[in-house]
Amino acid sequence: MTSNRKKRYDCGDIENLYQQYLDNELNEEQKKLFEEHLEYCLPCDKKISFEMKLKEYIHSQALKIKDSETPKFKVENIISGSS
Image (tube, rainbow, N blue to C red):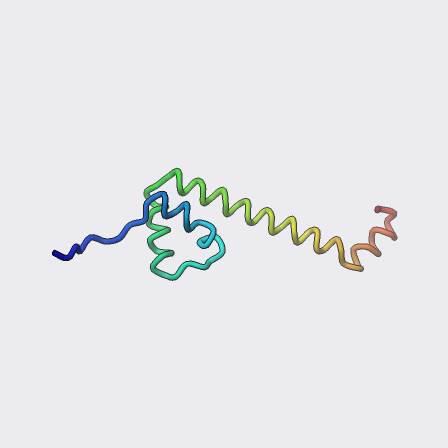
């Protein structure tokens, strides 16, 4: 007998796939199943929300560091007397 039940991800699936989700590496079906799980699982939703905010923060800090290494930034700091 063939089951017509729709596949659902459980919390273990989310744990195993969250980095790929954050990096936008899941295919459409995986992404849909992942997001459906987040709709009804508050702990997973909170974890993914935290991980997304952390990733955004790290990215913004990396951009600041990159910008601080540009010649323009260095010249402006020399002119203003900052190190």
